[in-house]
Length: 162
Image (cartoon, rainbow, N blue to C red; front, side, top):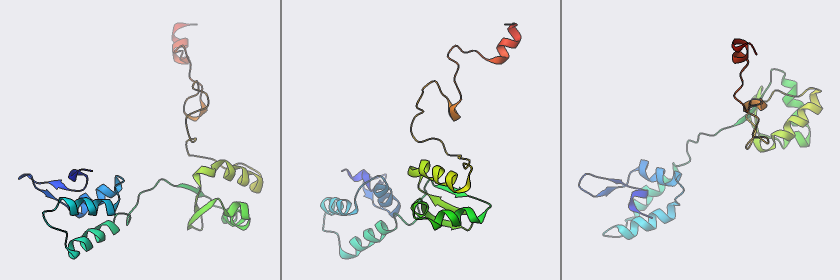
């Protein structure tokens, strides 16, 4: 671990630890106890209790605001979510309620959610999330559309008279 992991270098060559630089290091995967030990070893003197407390308080703010990608089930029919939450299998797929019309669902179990909603409602839901992982067939493009291997386009055929 280098000092650059959690500190900003000043023009005179010294390093300054700020809340932003420490939290950035935590977001990059460094552990707070390791950073505190590293800083304590690099200082010309042991860190004071107040310095340790300040650094720990900054570390506590690292997860205060998080941006996540969520899979959300939305419906205009309130009964859909109520029926899904009523059953044990459906309840396991719901992570968090956002409103009466929307819930966060487990994206890793999307196939189970689609199957459950299809059984429950009699029709499959529209899924607007890209499939997890690479497409099964490399000849298929986005949304499962076939990719022509020869570069053929309908507009070219019409112009060339083929």
